[in-house]
Image (cartoon, rainbow, N blue to C red; front, side):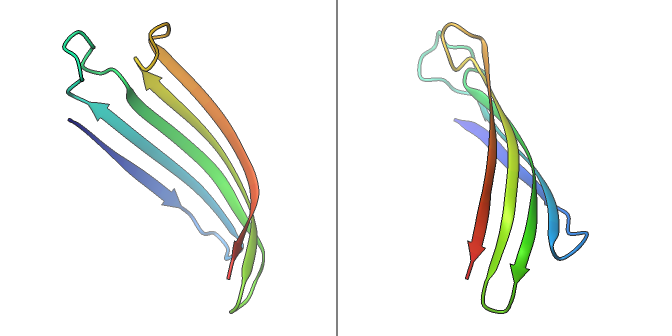
Length: 96
């Protein structure tokens, strides 16, 4: 049994540029075995990004999309009490 949620914010200062931010979390209150800590495998993730549209019309849109994300897991690995991973994403979004 656990709980979690997410929060996302996108700001649109112009129609072509949109900064974004997000926060996701998962908290565990019950574990599969009694000897595991109650907060084992709790997760928190932060994401920030930017999306810039190059061209859009009534039929299609394409945009440059960049994001940085950091994920922290508590008690997910036996050797490390906390594991943090980061990722960087850069791509082009197509919408039709």
